[in-house]
Image 1 (spheres, rainbow, N blue to C red):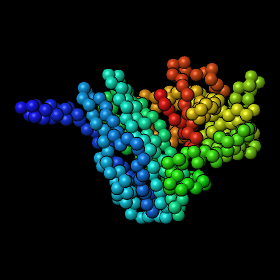
Image 2: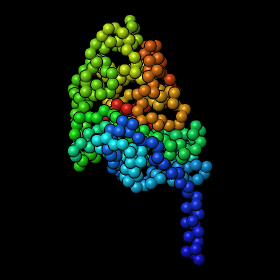
Image 3: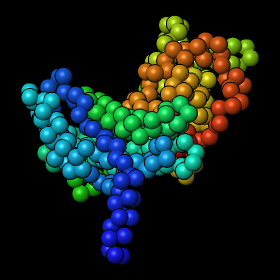
Image 4: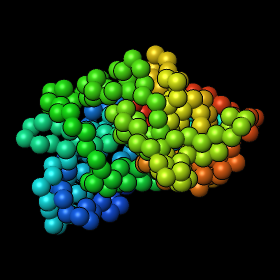
Length: 335
């Protein structure tokens, strides 16, 4: 009788827990046919993605095929009949879903990197490292939204890795787990005692401490920035600017103007928020773009043109430390 009762209770628990499947089936064709192979290394410490609450039920989140290594290889093979010469390795470091009971809120942390394998040496291509926020008031079906977001991020990340610039520092396969520390040792902006004054067009030039020749920050009589100009005294498009360094201090261009880049024991950061940095996307419930640069060009332009500084900021923006990925320059949101 006890065995029957236990079996019944176990069956009730199983029936109460539903499953949301994350399908990795979006097209990941390399349109330039540069890639020969795509291999996945699953380095997640915990393979359990986590659960979410939906309409009073617990929903277990799972990949459609939990043998991710073979699935990624088959996924790539199905979408890429014409091959090139590049062997790309995807390092999946973390995918963890956190549910906040009775709040309607959820977070998804994703960390994934890509490398190109050249004769047994690995060269860093790109990294996505972020936490996504979901709110049931904005996104009623959070399990479905989380599933779509993870699928979108991983497929977009793979596609961008086909043609992304590659760092020149070689890493041995046995050292891949420590790739961040190895690469940071060669980042001049991290290891230089003095930063080089000037305007920087992108994160790559900033990390190499190579300011754009002839570019300068134009200020009015009050000291407010009114634009960035080139060697011909012509205004430069905001989409061409990462930031600038003046008197040893670095500033990052954002939709609310230039914000000082500060540093603590965790890395470099600006004091800002999702709402400030992505005002057009603040009501979507989650940021799912792999690369952030092009999304806010127009808003940044407006900020420069109006001489926007921190005094024009939204008091309800819930400001906190937004870290800057040391390898890519992308924002890392923790809140």
